Length: 258
Image (tube, rainbow, N blue to C red; front, side, top):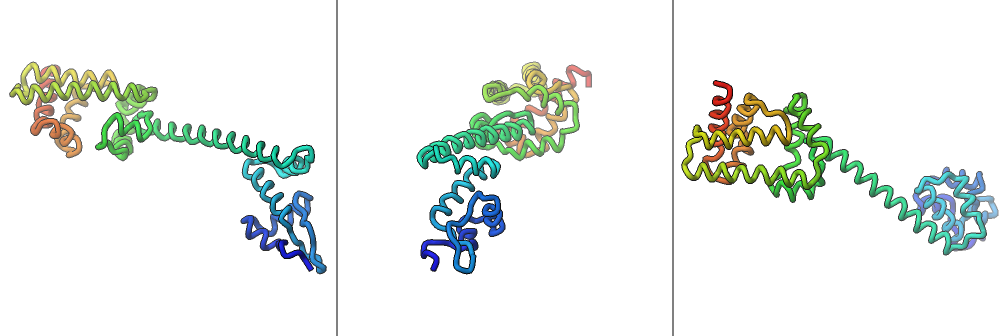
């Protein structure tokens, strides 16, 4: 009679989540031969066989070829404790490799849109809780074929967190001065308002792409047409979006004679 603590090939396959065919193959190449057989010749696997299978599957998961696994497990100069130390080291190396791979994939994903090389957490820190990553894909879909988009991609491809923090600080400072002028009742067509609009255009040119007066007019129109952009200004001061639009148009007309 077979021992009560032995397993049929089907049961071992079920426990180890491998196929019966795999176990037959391991037996045929001498990698894992059953510890016993029934009088009828059926394979029976014991606890030692189960332990060896666990070792085989571990090394297979790490990408070792079967021939090398056999050499490792049949090296009788290496005891069980040394096998565990080796496995611990290999797992650590695999974790490190996967972490590096995951980081590379994340960087590639971040660089794909808007040239913003930031993690989602850093985007939240820099741009605030209202930032929506879907805007990046939307912007690429709308402007991806333009020269301005290509320029922005080239210029921002090397930006890190500190660069984007600087951009955010410049933008916030300019908007604060626009809001100050608006609250003080400065007309949108005044020199002061137009100079602020010109500073805005030059800021875009310095940081992202060559912002012509024609492009700047288009941005001004978007500040009123897209509720999300309008809300950005209206949160600072109600009416600031319209004032900013008008100042940009007045400045463009001043420089182009339009």
